[in-house]
Image (tube, rainbow, N blue to C red; front, side):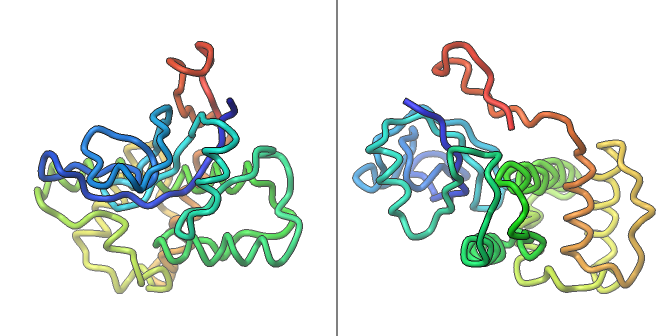
Amino acid sequence: MTIRLYVMPLEAGIGPELSHGPKYLSWRWDPDPSNNVGVSDWVPIYYGTFDWGLFAVEASALAHSSLAAKPDLQQIPADLDSIIGSAAARDTARSFLEAAAIPGNWIGINDTWRSVVRTVAGFMLFAQRYDGIRQKDNPGAPAFGSQIEGNLNVQWGSIPIGIRDAVVETGQSFGYDMSFIVDTTLVRSILKTLADMWGDQPVYMGLELFNGGQTFTV
């Protein structure tokens, strides 16, 4: 079996009120088991509390083929160091991410898939921290993804002050210098810069329990 990466939507579970899990993978509170491909060996990076995630999946070739056929997920090639290579592949990835409230128009045909994955992971890791801080200070606050959905081209100065403060607090909790933001900076530019600030640190996807004891990183 091999490990592949997917950006996949989540679905609400049949268990606890806030349970959400991958739409096409097996999980405890799956509301529609007949719709998944029967794979339970997976590890997520969730887009905060928004309904998307990046999933590392260990499965058979048949299961990967079944996942690839799903219309509402983005599969990542097995060779992460291969380049996007074509305008068609670039545009598909861009459109998919943008529709999921993830900035995507920065992707170029000479970028590697690894750089795409690492940047998407950077967006999601920031959203996780943001949602954690926001929920602590303001229980019931909307998820980061829902707040930026449709607002990627909004300028920083037009964002409510409470959200701006939470973004700055989140960035500073990572040790990031947030002084690059001015009133005219677009939301998408802010998020891309924050994702890039992750630098060359590895992104750990886990999988030790069913990957021969090896941690999968990108």
